[in-house]
View 1 (cartoon, one colour):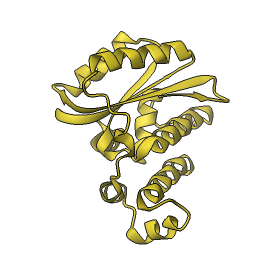
View 2: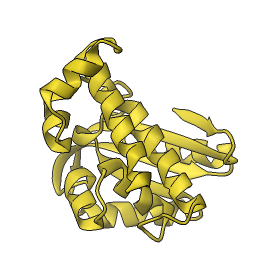
View 3: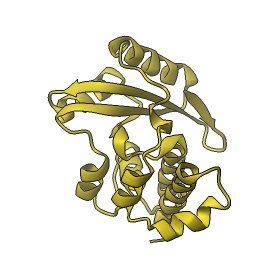
View 4: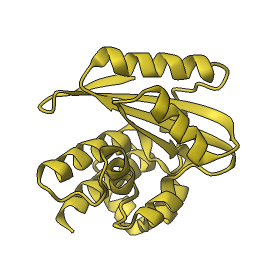
Length: 185
């Protein structure tokens, strides 16, 4: 999936893969960044991501953090991770959203000024992980896990459900709000 980030002159690419064995997380991320130099690339553990909106708002919030000189990390890719985790510490962000050794579901994020480059990255990753690509992975209901991970109470979700299409949508909305609020901390 590729989305134009209007007002920023950038494109966001997102690809999800299910059941990938990760031998060495740092090596995997380093290799992908090396293969696609010049792009901001992040790799997240999908189990703690609350849908596409979570990624989109995290990227936009990271961009705003840099624009307002409120960034926590030195690179956009790390800022995306920190904002998505709703934490202020990179180590805590890695604990929540960093990929781990072993079998995991992964979200690849690419941000670049050129749509063609983002498309190239996604196509290359699709070839590498062709049997594991699952574009529905992000939208699978993980309400209870996400609520626990990000400290969202049942009461808060219940109050949001009235304005959403069910519990999972309410949780996704609350996570998006929580990410956006990281700019005010």
